[in-house]
Length: 494
Image 1: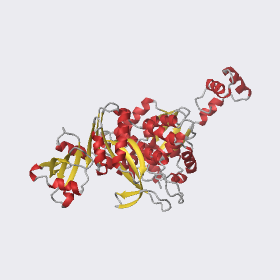
Image 2: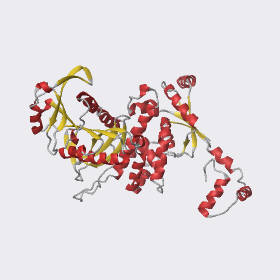
Image 3: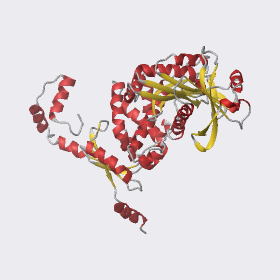
Image 4: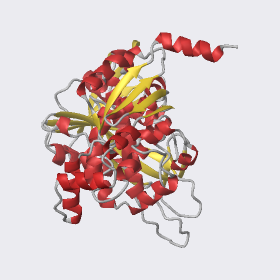
């Protein structure tokens, strides 16, 4: 009952619910006067008045998007103390590009702590203890509640499914491996599979797997789950070459309202089929990515092992290359769309690759908890996905929320990466003033502060209550250029 806006009625209700005591408001008033505590309400409100200059204050700009996540966190982790603080700590660690939780030991700025609703930064030991006590059922419930699927119910869906390989450097434990795409060698690794919506550029689903998992089989499971949950009008799915498997393509063809585009593998028996395609079958088109460049494309049929019927193939020919590298095949079950339009559509998958690039370098996607026990005596190590699932999905939420935030600003900011948005607007110093009813964030002057004013005015008018910070109403203010110049001249005097 230490809330600054608690009333005597709230106290009476609390006594009744917690201690089964029927006490009237007048009785409480009389008891407070007897012990000279009648002005306790005023003292509590006065204690709430504080002013502090902090960093990381731009994190409050994400409050309208985080509010829903906080409510769903309470719903998912009902009964587990400290869940909101832990989830917000993990979220802002990702958003600000702080790789590992042990960096919390050196993060003493109160601005980061206030973002999580605390007076001090959560210690790494407290965070590790919370994660250890967190059940997998809680993690899965949090994942289901926070997935942004509501915008796609019964609508047309255009997605890409791809894997991201995270290297594991352990020598003690034997875990499955995979070829790492950037290091170019086989090594111990985990794989992260995300479903990426290509129109709004949001991550919809996530499945961590061991290093020997394949894109083809995992994508088949994920698309079936997604269709059953969203029931879309139609789905267009794009897969890289890892999703090319004859039996999987045959099963994808049987799913209703699903259209797929899969890049083919250049296997010897397939290359022999493509070499038989006469030159007259190819048509010259302008490259979608470079208007000055011309490309040759043929619309042919390919016999794939595992498929009973021939599969339509968009075959690109690069005459400058030799051998199998001349061919770039794209398999599809779309019999209506033109060859050129299918090529343009397939290339939109590059946005998914750019998403992984942003998550790796700006949101520290590769900095994940261990998915294996540190017990070298065990011969077979079971893949433990609880902690990887939690942290990997929180990083996806950070990517989605930063995307929604930048789209709330002027159009010139829409194409900026998450790291650029954080540097420009979120990692900003400000003076934070708290009262019993409000939390006021007054940003220090910076060049592009005008880009935020319209966005902040909308938040001020909405009277947004911060549920994880005693329901205080969030307000934004900006230091004027004149105030900044006075402060600057004072600091540079002498």
